[in-house]
Amino acid sequence: MSTEGPPVTLDGTAFLFPGQGSQTAGMGRAFYDNWPEMRTTFDRLDAAIDIDLREMCFDGTEAEIRRVSNTQPLLLTTGVSVYEAVRMRFGVKPALMAGHSLGHFSALAASDALDPVATASLTHERGRCMERAAATDGPGTMISVLLSDPETVEDACAARDDVGVALYNAPKQTVISGTTEGVASVRATLEERTRTRFRELDVGGAFHSPVMASAVDCVEDAMTEVTIREARVPIVSDVTGDTYTDPNVARRDLTTQVTSSVDWVRAVEQLREQGIERFVEFPPAGVLSNLVERIAPQADCITLETPSDAREAFA
Image (cartoon, rainbow, N blue to C red; front, side, top):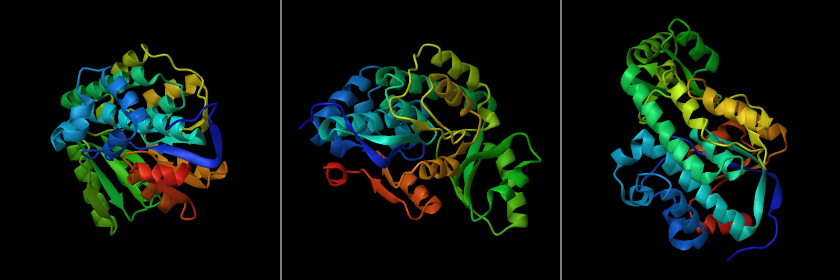
């Protein structure tokens, strides 16, 4: 099945791409098994790097999938491959795109600002950069802080320079990241001052924190090998909340996000301000839709977990 001609823009619809922490064993397999277009793109990206993405994605262990240098190209390849198949099968594209952390790379590849093959290699190297930073400057950790206002969490982090707010995920859900000692100290402060709840995150590193500082130059070096073009679909940045197509903005944001916060609340609010009413989350789907529903309860959220979900959304 395929359509001819340029894709039709779905007014009021944004496509979302998830980041680390969303990965699951077998993600995207239903699409791979049923859609030749998805297999073609997936296998092309798989061939671009020195790990077996297909074997790892569909039959790998939790430990393999969790390793950062594996997780990042796995998420990128899964999301972009399903997007390419949706574009070819249904002849549609969104009005806007956004991605959460690593998902920002997926959004740029889907919007043709980045070549998908080059991006698979880039995210693999980015993961290696982060692994080296964690080994050099860690150990580090991340925990989700629930029920507290962001300002309260920021205030608790202010006394230390080795921990900070990494993710603004929802109005009362932030994530702090940093050294193990720093995160434990901030947690103790919040427990004294508030009735906050916490959830440990199993993501393989202290991302978007000072622990990743030594990865910045490494990522910048990797990005010098990659050409970034004008995005064909505008991107809403998870760093600034701004909407852009400019390749210079993309390059800046992709480097900045290594150590800076992801502001998903601001990104979703910007999407809503630009008229987005329907959010379609690409595999591995579910995490971002839950966050969107907390930020914008009136929004229509669709998770693409199987081909039938896509047929219902686009046919």
